[in-house]
Image (cartoon, rainbow over all chains, first blue to last red; front, side, top):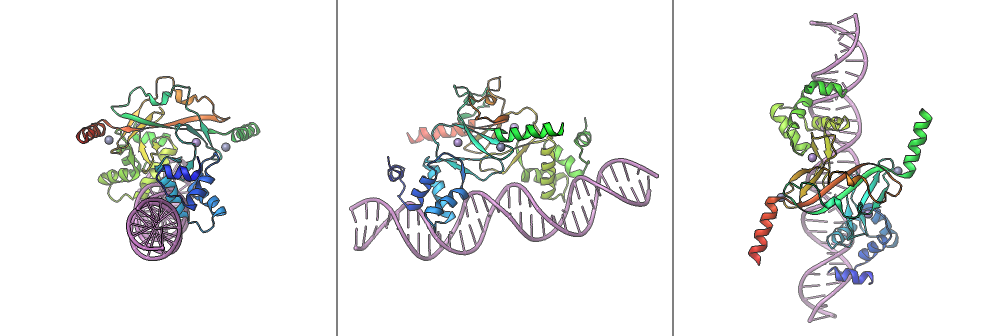
Length: 145
Length: 145
DNA sequence: CAGTTATTTTGAATGATTCAAAAAAGCGCT
DNA sequence: AGCGCTTTTTTGAATCATTCAAAATAACTG
Ligand SMILES: [Mn+2]
Ligand SMILES: [Mn+2]
Ligand SMILES: [Zn+2]
Ligand SMILES: [Zn+2]
């Protein structure tokens, strides 16, 4: 299916900013609105940041993209949708990586006691150190020892 | 241990705003800085919102309180610390409830593949409808059927 | 192509959090 | 109790991501 068709299927008009945004978000990654805007502006100068915000809001609504929120960071957007995967954020450098849903059977959707809530979704964010930052920390502690 | 002693143990000076904040956060709940400020101001008029922000930042740093972030909401603070429990947020009314760590053996800390990250923490936020909102939704769908 | 409606542009507003400088208060010591 | 040093609070302003609003423009329908 072409990008235009995807937009139409979602009930959205086919516009240049939207096509450019789809293109930018095609490759894997977790970009902020500002970052998407920078990249869109490369191929489509004159596009406003506000337009990118509008596009991303519409896409999120239509579930063409997924919006993820990490502490202390602006919202980020990715094209990997529909699989409720999770994320790790490096507390050293801020790098983000995808994590497939834990140990098979989605244990994260079956808490022991949900206090009467009907659960629809689980958002899981891991925190840790990426390989590079962990290595750096190792060298650090070795040097000071 | 008294609140004063807790502050001293954390290396923090004992001040009125800090004691008042500890008092406010004694009971379970998830309050925003603004809400803490409102309650502190009741017993300690003249306290500034900025002071509350300072206190909460110091407390979070010292792990006297835990800060949790929910999408679309200002940060919230709670006194239940040290057990890495999780949360549900009602998508209807915004109510927040605690959820003990899922099915015993903390499966949320053992993802199938962490892409080389060394994990230190898992933040799990469930989304759903609280009992009241679920009941309301039921009535709604019944009426329109 | 004209009419209708969605989208983009431009410019400003909002709200939570942070920054900075001066005043006040807490603590250790005498 | 009083001094001096350091932390905390106050006051006032700044920052940043996101949102709001109105007018201009562009996409779809027939
Ligand atoms: Mn992802
Ligand atoms: Mn809690
Ligand atoms: Zn890193
Ligand atoms: Zn509810």
